[in-house]
Amino acid sequence: MLPRRYLPPIPALMALEAVDRLGTASGAAKELSLTQGAISRALQSLEQLLGVPLLIRERQRLRLTPAGQDYVAEVRKALHLLASASITLRANPTGGSLNLAILPAFGMHWLAPRLARFAQTHPEVTVNLSTRLKPFDFATTQFDAAIHYGRQDWPGVHYLKLMDEEVLAVAAPGVPPLTKAVDILAQPLLQLDSRPGDWGRWLAHHGHPGLRPAGMMFDQFATLTQGAIHGMGLALIPTFLIQRELAEGRLVPVFGPPVRALGSYYLVWPDIPRPERAPLRSFRTWLAAETA
Image (cartoon, one colour):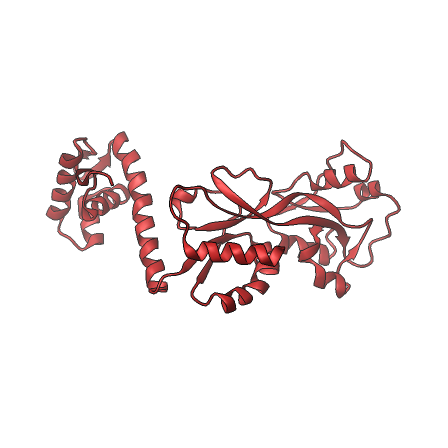
């Protein structure tokens, strides 16, 4: 426990954060429903408590010192975490919530169809889902765990491998048959902007290393898949995402069987020295059984 003298009053921190955004004590007072004098006293007491000047007073404006700017950035994170904790508590007052960061395609096509089974076996756990496309610092968010695609390159976390990935070269029906892998170079190619080397790895797998063909970029598999369906070009798409499209004939393979992708899917959670929360333990155990 930190000494209490290092824990400033929340109203003073809120006053500092508001002044940083708004630039005046009057603006902060209006936003926080306080008087301008109350804001000024809160800021003065905060500076006295910390023993560091936080503000530069210029006529009617207030500007934070460089040290104050660094401090308020950390204060803003802490206030967001407190607010998030309160929202989580109100959403599930009996406890047992799990905040999970997911990848859109994996969450929609793999995880969502299975979550009903988790809810049936663990009705005490409320799962809250939010999208995150890249690794982040767990310490600055409300997330308990995340779905990660790639390698084991997320620092400071534990890993539970969920599945490997295979990608299939597909296109809309009517694309002329390809007799060899390099025939794709004469076709328009579609690719994910987070995986710009996929077509090069696919060609290397088929005996043509050293090539890195360009293609139209998409930020998510959902839009990339629709582009392929509407005849915009050839696409490399994970097989688990397009089972229905293949079965219904809206997409067809253009050359060869599925190819093992570079990455895998993992559940990751922070490696921190404190007891693990029961909702995360239940969810991880259930996922391990689902993927066994």
